Image 1 (cartoon, one colour):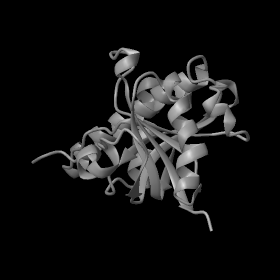
Image 2 (cartoon, one colour):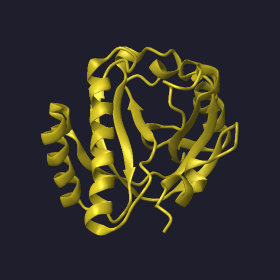
Image 3 (cartoon, helix red, strand yellow):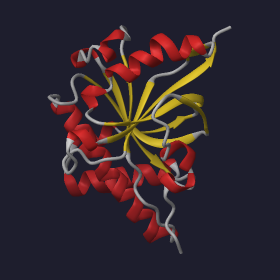
Length: 206
């Protein structure tokens, strides 16, 4: 039996090829999530949050396979990013960023199973940050998205195009947090080849 893979099941959302902004309808999804603030390159809280997310995500996978007989591929790391000042994203003022890191979960994963996996992972790994994880439902619906290839710090121009050109040209306004989906492992991929989906929920401006 083929394992569930969100990148395959929601291909329109996780495998875009467009290099300029285009619209996509994003269905409701559930995630495990954790919040924080600060520069992801230097924040110890960010590193601990990502470690906790992956630890619990793999524990959920193995618990599901063992107890339910249902296996799945652990989804990519995703992040919602926001600030009181949107310009900090185009200027890359990372200390002012708020973040919510996420990993998608299949719809059969219940809150009880997530809690069970958290307790098992906490007992095994002893990572206090695991206690901060929670189940999160996200329904972004109509969104603009684009596949960005390159360094995270090179996202500024394509985000500026969204904010200053694409939205106005299409009578749209932002309706949710900036969303990124990390398709590449930055530990194994050179910056110029990193693949990141940039997504922005939108709605009609009037």
